[in-house]
Length: 222
Image (cartoon, rainbow, N blue to C red; front, side, top):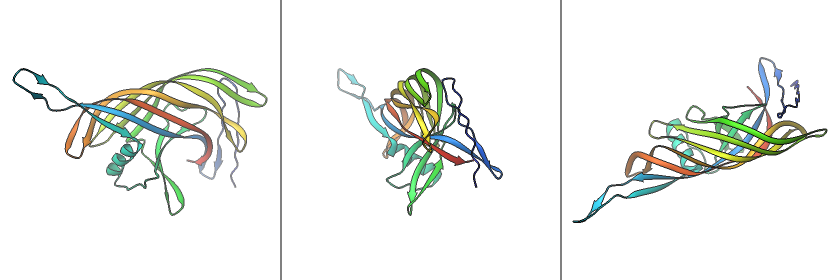
């Protein structure tokens, strides 16, 4: 039997407590989906005619599918086409949440923690939020700066973005358990990326969007 204790504190955040089951801790985490839609620009070989030199920029897209494929190569794991990238944040505040790949095998969901290869960091978070006390409910805005870094043997990049996010209440077993930030932000960055199978890893300039969605709060054993 799990003995869960939860403590809700009001100071612009809701604090979700943790219980214990034997030697393990049962904690509440916010589980959100990550969606990347990036464009990378890289320098191609120059061409010229008798009077002019032309420098050409190539373009490549980087999405969840591409990131998961790169992680497969590093981990020596083959994920299904339905695999997703998730952001798992501890409560009440987590400036370095986990990034996991969630997949399904024979009807069972399983998570692969890829944080050592693909990490997230909240660099700044400023709320302009109204929180009703009874019943507890949050509504407002948050001005966030978040960075993601991919560190693999064959490719690496770092992107950073600013967002005006929505602030909502996350519920666990129908009770308020966390403040949750959701929304989409513009991101820019740079790194080294293999733009195709016939082109080696090259420096790239990156731009695009990152979306964080979902307000699920789950009890997890650590």
